[in-house]
Structure formats: structure tokens, C-alpha cells
Amino acid sequence: MIYMDHSATTPVDPRVVEAMAPYWTEFFGNPSSVYGLGRRSAAAMEDARRKVAGALNCQPAEVVFTSCGTESDNLAIRGVALAAAAKGRAWSIPAQSRRRSARTPR
Image (cartoon, rainbow, N blue to C red; front, top):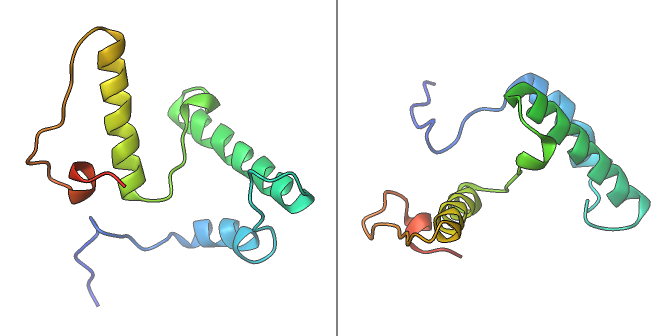
């Protein structure tokens, strides 16, 4: 089969599957919680954040993980709007945005 819709989703690299497997099956705690399983998940997320920041040559605090495209779109739109407001400029998104999620935040 030849999959042609990589804009919607992409296959996961086998190395990523291998690295993530323990967090899908054993260490799946809520990283925002205070119990041991959650703290381990939080430590793993912070380790991943440091690795991504190193690859992008930025600070770990500048790396934000989101759960979906809609969340990413809304975070980016909010960031641009807040940055413009901080400079005293108004900013709005055009009504004919490409992605429905950008037009209708959840």
C-alpha cells in the first residue's frame, strides 16, 4: 500500500515506538500528579524536553508538547495574539483560515 495523506498522519518510526513502549504499557502515570508513577512520567517528559531543546538549540522551557493539531494551532494563535498585544498592536485571525480548528477553538 502507498499512503498519500501524510498531512493528516504519518507512520511512527520504529525507534520512537521502541522508546515510547514503556510509557504506553508500564509508566503511564499522569505527569501532573504527585504519586510515584506520575513523577516518573514527569521526569521522562522533562528528559524528552531537554533532548528536543538540545536538537533545536533552544531552552527546555521553550519546548511545549501538545496532544493534537488543534491544541497546537490554538497555542500558536494565542501566542501570536498575546505577543502583538504586548506590543500594543491588535491581531486577529482571518475568518477563512485553512484549518477548522483554528476557526473554532475548543
